[in-house]
Amino acid sequence: MSTVPYLTAGWIMLAGLYGIVTTRDLVHAVVCLSVTQSGTYVLLLAIGYRSGATAPVFSDRPPPPAGGPVTDPVVQAMTLTDIVVGATVTALLLALSVQVAKRRGTLDPGALRPLEP
Image 1 (tube, rainbow, N blue to C red):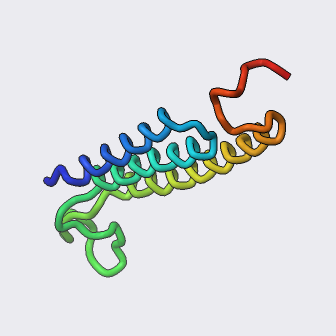
Image 2 (cartoon, one colour):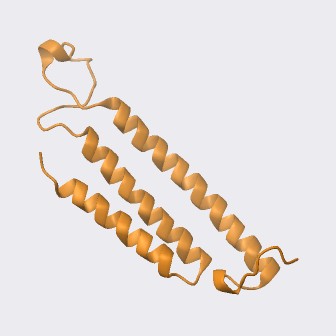
């Protein structure tokens, strides 16, 4: 078992979190959030990976007890769900950023004052 995928996932998440914390632009913050979520894709795929295993398609060979190891399809499905949810959240946050820019004239979170019309 290699630790490289886990370290890569952690590094991607930390790079995204650093961008979120240090940014002065809402669009940049949304992009950094997407980068952070990309780290979860790598993490989920690293969890589901099995060395020497094949895809869980049983059309041409017997089921796993006789046919050898297969990868976990639940983790792959969770990764695909994560990608879809991430795209949806990114689109929603970018739409909110556009509305903030239209109403307030800035994308700087520090320049936005709460509960002011």
